[in-house]
Structures are given as structure tokens and as C-alpha cells.
Amino acid sequence: MGDGTRHEVEVLTSVSDEDAADLRHLLGLLSTTAVFDRARIESLVAHDATEMLIVRERGRIVGMTTVVTFPLPTGIRGIVEDVAVHESMRGKGIARLLLQRATLLAREHGLRTLDLTSRPSREAALRLYESVGFVRRDTNVLRYAPDAVS
Image (cartoon, rainbow, N blue to C red):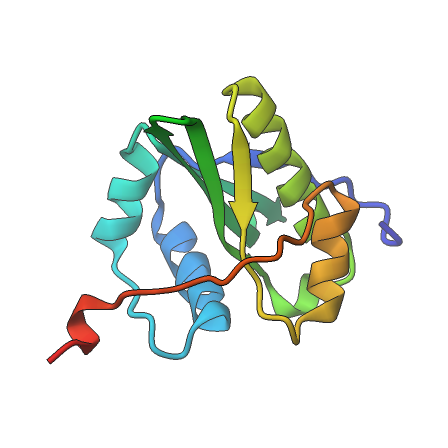
């Protein structure tokens, strides 16, 4: 990092008021329709199958992602969700650090696979994901949204 700051990834274990404000901002970068819910974040942080990975700058959360693990008949699988980096911190390797930690968790937890999805138009993000070991798959991602069904 050009400014000499060495960032480290940590697992969020509790949510302070400042953390909540930072996470609200990062969530807004991911989705214009997502509603921030502190209780949901606190539940996620306490849940055994989820780990919210964060990076701080001067005590404030500037990057996040969540790793979710779940057992299936074919083995323990995982998924990376909600990778977000504060606008002022982009290009400093924060997302790379988060993803490298996520892949380390996959190995530590003995996951059979760790999946991540991204829009095809996000070419720079896709190159980053591939550079840390994710491989594009020839697949279709399908989504069912219960609230969208009448």
C-alpha cells in the first residue's frame, strides 16, 4: 500500500455504534434497495455458520465481506457474499486481503468449495477474484425471491 499503512483482516465479533454506521455505509454501496438492520448484523456476527471479515483504517471499518458455510450431502460448502470497500479506500488492496482471508478460511474449515458470484460487467472485480484463486464456471445462477412472487 502506497501510504505505508498495513491493513489486517479481522473477524467482527461485536458491533459498536461506529461499526454499525460504517456497515450501513458499506451496505449502501452494495445495494440501493437493501435495508440496514443492526439486529440482523448482530445475529450474523453471532451465528456459527457466518464470519464477517472486516478491515479497519484508523479504527473505522473500510472493507467487509461475509463467508457463509453449510453442510450438504456432497460436503461442506461455502459462499462469499457482500464484498464491499469504502470508496476512499479502493485500489489499496483491501478487497484482495478480504478474499485471501476468505480462501484461507475455506482451507481451515475443510470446505469442498467456496463460491462467489459477480456480474459479468464487473471485469476488474472478476480479474481480482481470479487472481486469488476463484475460477469462472460455465453455469447459470438462478434466484427465487419469495416476495416477488404473487
